[in-house]
Amino acid sequence: MRERAVIGGMDAPDLIAPPLPDPATTALFLDFDGTLVELAARPEAVVVEDALLALIDRLAAAMPGRVAIVSGRSVAQLDGFLGTRGPLLAIAASHGAELRTPANGHSLPGRSPALDAAAAEMAAFATRNDIVFETKSLGAALHYRARPELEAEASAAAAQVAATHGLTFQPGKMMAEVRLPGDKGAGLRALFADETMAGATPWFFGDDVTDEDGFAAAAALGGAGVLIGPARATQARYRLGGVAALRDWLAALLEQAR
Ligand SMILES: O=P(O)(O)OC[C@H]1O[C@H](O[C@H]2O[C@H](CO)[C@@H](O)[C@H](O)[C@H]2O)[C@H](O)[C@@H](O)[C@@H]1O
Image (cartoon, rainbow, N blue to C red; front, top):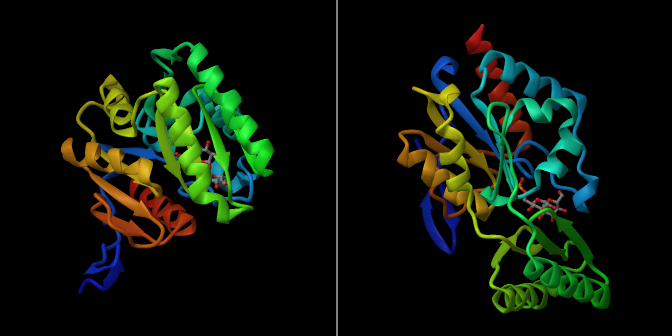
């Protein structure tokens, strides 16, 4: 029986844990922060344990060409965390605006003067308010995790900067970002078009609001979304309680592949 949870102020049925699909016909689209790795106090402080890297390696070997990372991080940032295995994986980065696959190489749109101007304004806001500023290939973010009372102000500032420079405003967990257009659903669809994905069923795993487009895209292609973390209103079909639960589920999937 499904449990019930209060989601967005309304009592709603909670989602069940995902069944284990057949790894031979499954494609995995994995968000990074809050999904593969636990959130940390600062963007650069996430811990990527050797056990996680080994798990990714085993998945990539068991499901060749059908393991993808779909992240708000840039490809450069993900490479920093994933090391030499990064270029071996399909990646949709920068919320879907940046793609890289082993077969097709790296598609990185140019960094516009508008983004540079926006980033400078975001950096100035961060300095004035003593919060963390993060610059990325195709975006810039204000992190107010250490000063949560600034959520409304930082979000309004980022939304204003985005509107001024014709960029996209992206809210996140304790973060407000401006970035180039794109979304994780488009990122999934682009990666799923690769011939290595032919005949597979896409599963998208994510924790944040930016992952909702990925859940919807996976479902539209005959697959499913899996929300990682506490219950909330979502387009995902299934839910796992957190990073550890996802890693356990992926390990069980690997057992199926043996
Ligand atoms: O799409 P994702 O892979 O989940 O990336 C989303 C954003 O993740 C990072 O910010 C989040 O994680 C930080 C480290 O744990 C945390 O400090 C922050 O509060 C979170 O919002 C990353 O810094 C962003 O660039 C990504 O867009």
